[in-house]
Amino acid sequence: MNILSVLLGGVIIYSLCKHFYNRFWDKNLTVSLSFSKNEAYVGEKIKLYEVITNKKIMPVPLLMVKFATSRYLKISDASNNSSFSNVTDKYYRNDVLNLGLYQKVTRTLEVECTHRGYFPINSLDLVYHDLIFGYKDVISFPCDISLYVLPKMLDLKTYEPEYKNIMGDIICKRLINEDPFEFKGIRDYQIFDSMKSINWKASARGGSLKVNEKNHTSSVSVTILLNLESRTATRNNETDEAAISLAARFACDLVNQGINLSFITNAAPKGGNNATNIDSGCGSNHLDNIMHTLARLEPSNICVDFHDILEHYDKTAGDNNYGIIISTRTGTAIRSLINTQFSSSFVFVLPYNKYDELSTSDKSIKNCTTYYIND
Image (cartoon, rainbow, N blue to C red; front, side, top):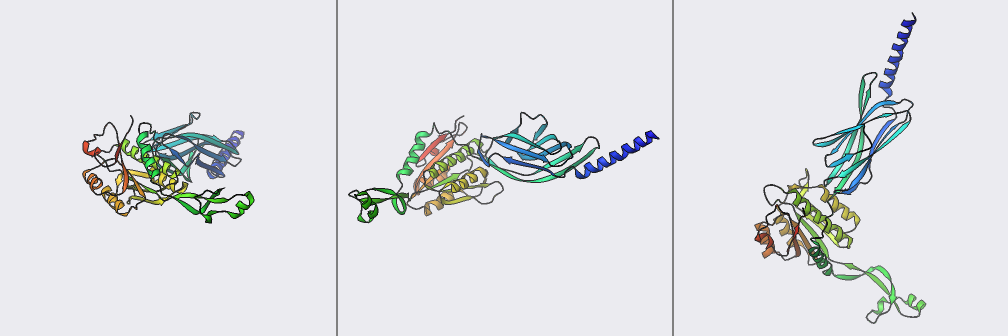
């Protein structure tokens, strides 16, 4: 009788525990992912934080956190042995842990950004395994985080003289005009100053003539035109990435100089149908827009003939516009257009590496400077 009572009691307790865990294991259980920053450069390492919280009196003995992201994000956690991953078309992460009652676990994962791109993580799964009751359940949590991996900032030591010449040419072409609405300060009167610039109140206080000094504005604008058409039937990813990185370097330096910048390319993001055209602007938000666009470009997704882009640009560019043409190829039609018809101020930058065969005609294009990609 006692044995039967014990067995019956065990069955009852087993059934209650099983019912309780099956019904309430996911109650007050939360999980979240967050990057330490929203953008990084190729080759940079950042952090990915994984936070799991159990806000109930019931422990969760075996839990698995699963999510997928791009295979170009190399994620590692040297201090954590209870995790495993699989890399195929994507990177699939599985972290195993157990949670005590009212426990919060934070895991810090190191992320190495190996390739330019835009990488979202839209969802993650919690998989519950009960080793005692043989029960398994899965719930999905929304996850709205993303990472822009920006083009690599190139080391221009071998290209520095040409780069400085281009930047110097742009800066020298700036038309400097005084802006009457941009007050800079007050200085002593000079013989060439006009009477209307005199600040009479400041002159009375100082006992000598003072004039209002205004900031100067630049009316020059620059357009970066990026051609990602392949030089050969087989694309050279290294050349493509160098061209994109050159565009990024020019964009950063020009905007930091306070120069208005527009950007045109014949490529579109993956899955896009329209070539990219960003109107002229300046400032940090404008630069972010250009850099994010460069991060998402898919070199093989060519939507427009670059010859047509150059032809339209030459017809519409104003006298104060300077073009920086960065092209992975020249081509007969492009060379003919630039050498015989192009009237705008410009420089032609041709990136290449040891696998590219540059002919005499490639280098004969007007205002051409070559950028060699280091091994």
